Amino acid sequence: MARMDSYVEYTLELLEPLGFVQARSMFGGWGLYHGGRMFGLIIQERLYLKTDDTTRAAFESAGGEPFVYDPGTGRKPVTMSYWTPPSDASDDAHALLPWARRAVDAALRAAQKKPAKKKSTATKKPAPVKAKSPSAAKKPAPSKKKTARPSRRA
Image 1 (tube, rainbow, N blue to C red):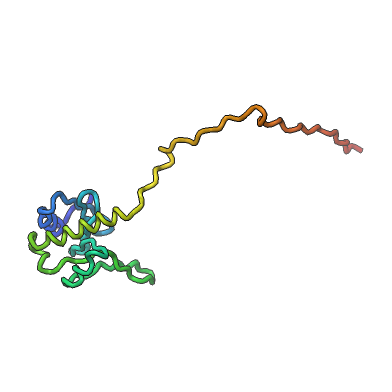
Image 2 (tube, rainbow, N blue to C red; image 1 turned 60 degrees about the vertical axis):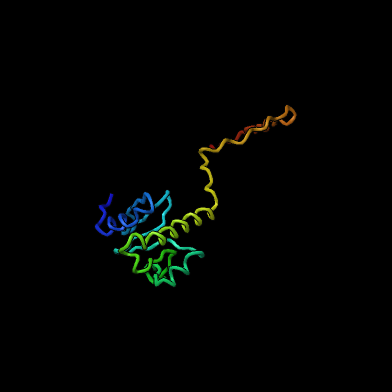
């Protein structure tokens, strides 16, 4: 497991009023989880919180910036659904709390939109086998008779 840096530890302290928040290392950054759902990321010592159609305008009007992922190799950068909270909330747990709650709510709404995962085939019960009626029994295939081949001796 990757060792947390001081910024991640500091952010977790700021988020304590939210309840139990867990940080997991991922792709050179950290994912922030509450209630088993990812609601934030920390990339290059910047906090980004999950948004959706309901909350994105509030983050944008408060001066937040989206997380933009650059996949490289000539592909277009991708704007993700994670935005920075307002700058005045970055050092104040009281100011950060409403933004973090919005992010947790957005993560919950996103999880509710996803269809339920399909069960793996290993846990499915096999389909019942229909009993064959005696009249539907297959007849054995006719056997082929071997024919003698003429010898090629001269």
